[in-house]
Length: 174
Image (cartoon, rainbow, N blue to C red; front, side, top):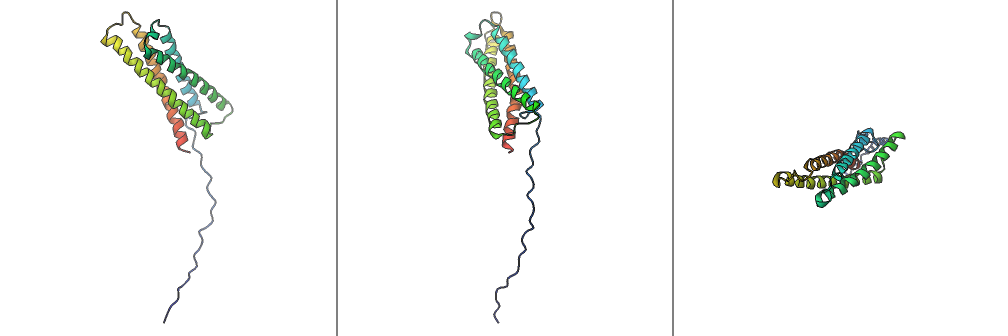
């Protein structure tokens, strides 16, 4: 006796509606939020204080690291002010930035400006330590002003870092 193959009907999986894509919640600090505006204003204020303190010294152009600090902090001022204006606009129209191209621009710009500011602050801190501790020439130099300007640059970088990480995270979570 020979048996043939048996065919058993298979039920199709039930038709379900695809769940709508859930959007990520806007955390404070992401572009277009009050937290982002606060971070941008902190970056701007600390960078302005840093550049003002550094420029009021007569001998900052003689040291390359201090000139680099002024240039990097100047770029940070422009970048932070432009993005603070963009954040104010987004808050006024009650919309956050969801466009991938814009958020990518913000993330790349924040990464570049925060890296430049951090590098300039580190270089200035190294020269300040050299002048004050190793050469002991604080009497003829403006060590306290150099230290203050460097500290403000570090604070500007400290406020720029969360902006970069939140923008990058917002990009990566799409």
